[in-house]
Amino acid sequence: MLQLKSFLLKHQNKFFCLFVFVLLFNLFDVIFPLHTNRDYSTIIEAEDGTVLYSFLTNDDKWRMYTKLDEITPNLQKAFLNKEDRWFYWHFGINPISVGRAFFNNTIQHKRTSGASTITMQVARMLEPKQRTVFSKLKEMFRALQLEWHFSKKEILQLYLNLVPYGSNIEGTKSASFIYFGKSPQQLSIAEITTLTIIPNRPNTLVLGKRNDYIQQERNRWLKKFKKNHVFKDEDIADAIDEPLIAFRRSPPKFAPHFCIRMKKMFPTKPIIESHINYNMQLEIEEIMHNYSQVLQFKDIKNAAVFIIDNQTHQVITYVGSPDFYSNATLGQVDGVKAVRSPGSTLKPMIYGLAFDKGLYTPRSVISDVPVNFDGYTPENYDEHFHGQVALSDALAQSLNIPAVKVLNAIEVKTLTETLDKINFKQIRKDKDKLGLSTALGGCGVSLEELTGMYAVFANNGKYFAPVFSKMMKIKTVSKYYRLQRIIWLQKY
Image 1: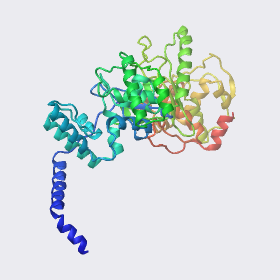
Image 2: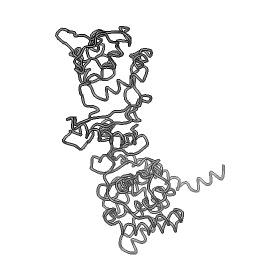
Image 3: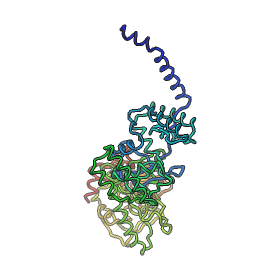
Image 4: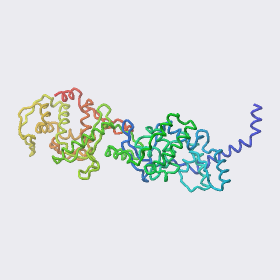
């Protein structure tokens, strides 16, 4: 205790100065808060993490958000070795580098080095200013704030998200997709090294225009990495031999209707993780595009596909039209959401509700003969009458008159209220004026609503709202059908 007391007395001035510094720093930290929020390009990912679509930021930048788990060890080693080898050791400012830069700049009477750490570079990118002594001091203060509020990994993440690559491209993830057509995790050592050298000269080292010169610079740095033992010698040898194939590509733009919808649903999320099955999405798009070419000869110019996984209720495929960019077919109209006549597709629901009320069974017999409901006289599509038919056969043949009779028996209100509960929006608006023609398509529904309705039959009569992203929770409403009656309906 005496030794400790003696030590404290001996260094009390130093402790006092440290206390004052910490107090002042915290005071200035409150008065001049650090703002790190940035507007990032919205990215929509498929189930496997594949990027489906990306959007420009509000300031027209490609600034894609890099997640922490996307910062691979190779990416981290390359950037740290080139930009800030002591990143994990300093407190945002490297005193040795600052002293060396001050000495060199004084001797040579010009700025030869800025001594900027990665943390200081982040501070400068967050608040760009002309390079003066005052701005450098402010940059150092901001660097201390960054180190105070964030972990080293988060600071590196900020750096990789903001680092410039010329034109309107910012961040290694944006550069990776636009120049190499792949995610940061898929980059080779040669490609990673290329991305480390561009930010220092983004306006002169333009990928796709000066690739030969950039390759020379890349190889020069690869040799430095070899000298510093950053990567294995054989990996560096392969990287030096690797040709530089880089040019400006368009960012990914798959499933446009779905992705535009997701951006509207989650406007503040930089990364939206969906359940879209990437391979199935591409396959369905191709099938629908080819099939729509045939349908055009029948003057059918549009189509849409909406697929839900019956067990998980997740949306796994979403195609709003055969060609999003076709003006002739109004391709930008989302056919999944568009309100259309359902035709005969509501008949299974009508029969199911009748079974649920105990009015009929699948083997109940009903007469398919001319009928008049206060002036409304439905007819079958084949313009024939079939006499006495079982309901299961009437449904299989999609006969109109039996369906209208059953709807009349259960009352239109029963059908419209049920569809209202499972989120049929147009029917909710029109339910007070809908009549028996609803059984034959005399109402407005969307493909999304119909698909959700049909999923009821695979879930023991229970409705689950479609789940579009991993941020959404499963929502359900009470059962509408008894299990045994659903089995009968499916069986017959």
